[in-house]
Amino acid sequence: MDLKKYLLLGMVVFLVMASFGAIAEEAAAAEEKPAALAEAEVLAEEKPAEPPKEQKIEKPDAQQVYFGSAKSFFKPASVDFKEAVKATPEYQATKKKKIKSGSAKYWQLISQASERALRVIAKVGEETEYDLIVRSGYLEGMNPPIETTDITEIVLKKLSKKDK
Image (tube, rainbow, N blue to C red; front, side, top):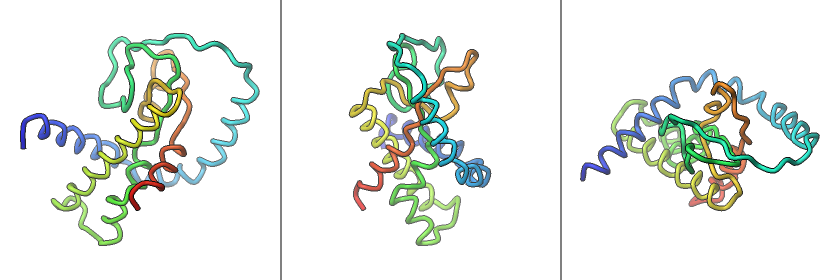
């Protein structure tokens, strides 16, 4: 394996490990998500359309950015990466085949699941008007916070249509 692939695999494994650190907490919050999405849609409809303005992040965290450049963007979006990974056939295989968490096979499948999720997120970025896609909560946690549109459902729909 050449150095670039090794580094990419290491980065993917790091992202996956960081993302799956709080799955139990996220599972409880996920049940409340549909109501939050409905509320966000109502709020979005009430706001008059404003022309987009360029935004920038001086020192972006590259591991939080899945598509686009945080150095200059107009229409940011966010995605729940854990949910995207959990929707992949590779992740489903870890559950269906009861592969032991932490085993080599588990991490191989999780890495493949992460790569698939990242490819689909990038495809959504190419097919939509969003010029920046980041991890949910990343831009909202900035000072001052930057609002994003949650595109997790779009990514999940595209994942459900892929290679099943």
